Image 1 (cartoon, rainbow, N blue to C red):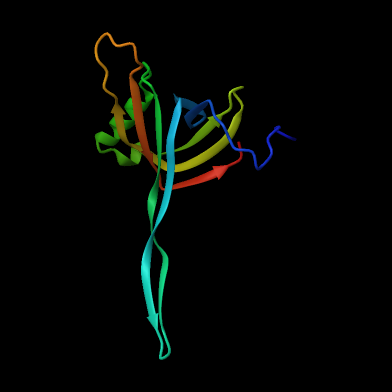
Image 2: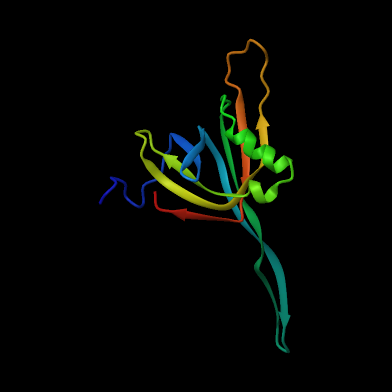
Amino acid sequence: MSTGLDQHDALTAARFSITIDGYEIASFSELSGITTEVEPVDYLSSSDKEVIFKKLPGKAKPPTVVLKRGKTGGMELWAWHQTVLAGNISGARKSCSLVMYSFDGKPVARYYLSHAWPSKLEVGALKAGATEVLMETVTIVCEHIQRVSP
């Protein structure tokens, strides 16, 4: 079945969501980034003839996802972060999906995050009477992130 997208087409998204146990806990207007990183380590070997200097993969850092949205009245994201702040790490670590939706509401990409938890929740600055939207930013850390089909 064709989705109308070629595998080489650049993805665009109008909305992003975090889903836990089939329930969308939060929707976002901006994905600031998904970061996976392996620290390079120096490796030096030598023989009678030469010295070889290489960079090899070292320790993997935990993947992170940073999402932004206009602040809403929903309490799910706040409650999840409060579980972390209370020190209940085993209760806070959830497997979830990050879904990216096109402008017509169809999923265009999906990532599976295992043992994820919100390490940072930030509510932006806003002056009383201002007309701007109050922004909320969440950083989610996980043990593993995997790209899966939409």
